[in-house]
Length: 217
Image (cartoon, rainbow, N blue to C red; front, side, top):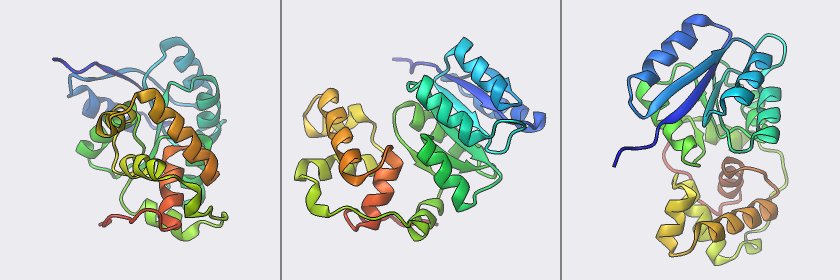
C-alpha cells in the first residue's frame, strides 16, 4: 500500500536553502513541496491557501519571526505541523519555538536523510528534537516540576511510548486502546505536567526523572 503524500511548505528567507530543501524532499515520492515563502506573512497566506501537512520554518525571518508565525499557525491551523529548521539553536529560540507549538526543531546542518525522517515523523504526530537539544533544554529549564505521583501508571506508559517517538495511533495499537483514548491521556498528561506539547511533556518527564534520557551523540 502506497504511503499518503505529505504536503510541505518551506519558509526561509534564503532562496538557496529553499531550493536545496525542495530538492531533498522531492527526491522522495511520499513528500511534496507544494509552496515556499521568504517571509512569515507570505507563509501564513500560503498555509491558508494550500493547507499543507507540514511547514518547515526558519526562526529568523524578515518582519514576523518564526516563533510568532508558529504561534499563529498552531492557533489557526492546529492540524498543520510546524518543524523549525534554523541556523540558530540558542536555548531561548528552541524553547520559544516549542512553547509556541512547534512539533520539532532541527539545525540547518542536519543531514538530508534526517530531515526527511523528521518531516515524516512530525506529519505522523511525533515530536522531534535534534540530538543534543533535549539535554540542553533540561539543563536550562527553570520551570517548577510536577510530582511523579500525579501521573497514573497508564499515563506513564503512554508518556514512555510518546518519548520513544510513537505516533498516537501506534501508542493505541501497542496498548490495545483507541486513538481517542490516547488523545485523552495526552491531554491529562499535558495538564498534570503543566505543558502544552508532546516534546515539552517528554522534556519535563525526563527532568523529573519519570523517564530516562537516551544516549545523545
